[in-house]
Length: 260
Image 1 (cartoon, rainbow, N blue to C red):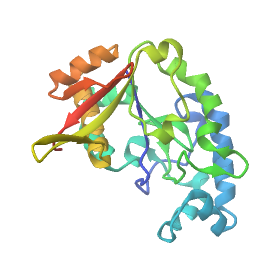
Image 2 (image 1 turned 180 degrees about the vertical axis):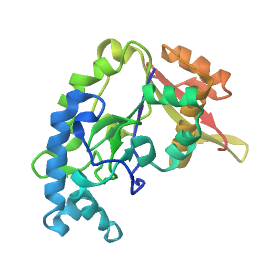
Image 3 (image 1 turned 60 degrees about the horizontal axis):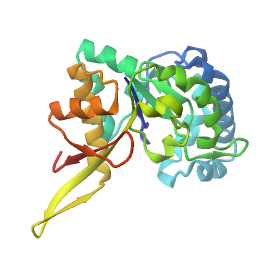
């Protein structure tokens, strides 16, 4: 099973690892593209601060991210699983997984990134700020930029098992499963169910969506589940206590929650 995750906008700072070595990152076929994006981002953030803030979509309170990006080549690193924070990663709780589940996470989780294309949770990276929606001056929209390189490496990375795609829309633009890989790809939509005046109302709520996705990935890893198809995934999630329904499209599942 390969699980595709979005990153978090906020990221942990600091680190005690050595400076970035792009050659050591997983998916080595992305090396050239990673070095190109990194170089463009560092150049942008080493120049006009106002321009960098505009390109990166930074508010005045986030201007410090520009200097952080400019120093990326020499910044200390830490495992990507420690860099990414936020609701999904809090619910996933990588730091508290037992050894078996942690090894499964290192094999199975792939985090998409505007800067790196995608990384595994054990990859040593510095803290950065660069979303997939950014349009770097020399490269254009990063979602479009990454499509070619990702198309080269992802079929092999997907292996021959289930691909569980939990990415947000912005990060899904970088790679779309095709052919036989698409046939064994599952997506999950989280719906919150509320009773309003005696009638059930369902809606997509960001906090529920992120937390539930993090929790269900943790539960799959902890239980040692290795579903091979979307149908097997639905069965596994039901056995873990989730309310799962057909999402109406091939491979699409709806998980219905009432509370966290």
